[in-house]
Length: 234
Image (spheres, rainbow, N blue to C red):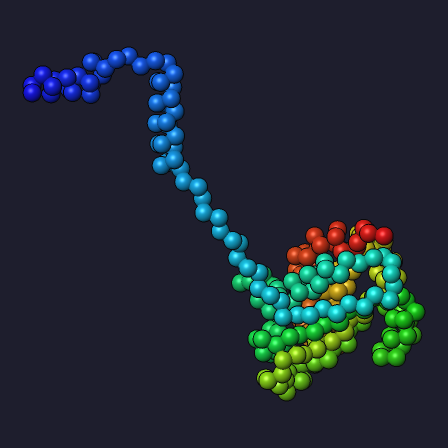
């Protein structure tokens, strides 16, 4: 009994065991290493990124001019992102005076039209009594005076229409020394703010500066979309 115990003790210490061959040593060490590494490092659990909230804004786009070709998906993303930034301003981000009191689950429609100088000249003469072309016009469906009359049970609202002259935008982009995509983004954001009741002409200096400041911050945030706004497809 004592001899058997001593033999077991020697085997545990490795004294009485037969010497291992090199292959067996490598095999045993590789198994030991794989067992330890599998316990130490576990495969990370794949997690889905947080879902982006679905935008309640529907952007209707009409292009009377086929050149330059505008990427409509980028255009919709620009408008929806800008309106989301205005509805959910960051603590140190864009400070606004609030959005229209739309019900949370309502569908909001905004229409964009891209025309030439003759068409926008006609609109500018008819609605603003100015006999010349301009860069952008806004036609709000709802004005600040109508905010209190919005029906809570409505499921669809139209914010208004924005009309942009591609001819004037091209001229101004060369004058300012930046791309046509950047100028279109600036004009669209300008038009969106007009639809929301902001102004820089018929208001005091404080309100005019508020609109300019919001427009600059929105432009800085979305300027990177200018490179993909003009489609490269022919």
